[in-house]
Image 1 (cartoon, rainbow, N blue to C red):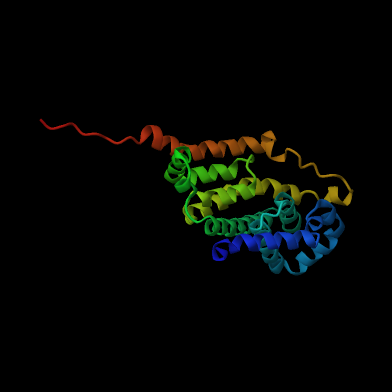
Image 2 (cartoon, helix red, strand yellow; image 1 turned 30 degrees about the vertical axis):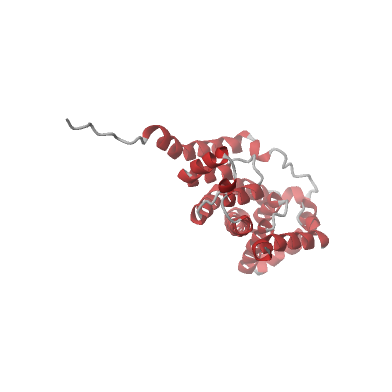
Length: 237
């Protein structure tokens, strides 16, 4: 039993340590405003090490499902700029999400559908037939919490390769939005202004391209369902 649930125990222990040392206060706009000079100077002197360290930190906090990933993404944009910040965030988030996926698979073992009713089994069948499309949609839709989307695929036995591909490419649009915010908040931080983040992912300039990507990812599903029908030959007389 312990051999199976040890990943869950490690995650719980890491979360307890994170909150015990006051972790949330360091992942805030106030902390960024207060320490921006020191952070910027360190990044300037140790660019590669800083990017690797940030990527590792992002992976760790994602793996233990710490809230506030959007703020950490803003940190990435502020410290490293749009290109490097996005790369570091996407790689870190993908690594962390994969660790959590593997942990969930270890803890829960068999597919959830094997222990559930026909509706869940039908959902699993559809998911497995179009894994990449479904997973990509889950990543694109901003309605689902990131840690939920990290865990659910493990319950349905999706392939690790498809999970990694869909995660990496599916989180790029949302990451770009928050990294670009971080890349442009220097003046606002210096002026002590608030950074409005409420409803950021549902603004027309953001949601319309995401909806477009969702529609594109639905095409393979629609093709399999309505177009790719088996061809039946005529019976010989």
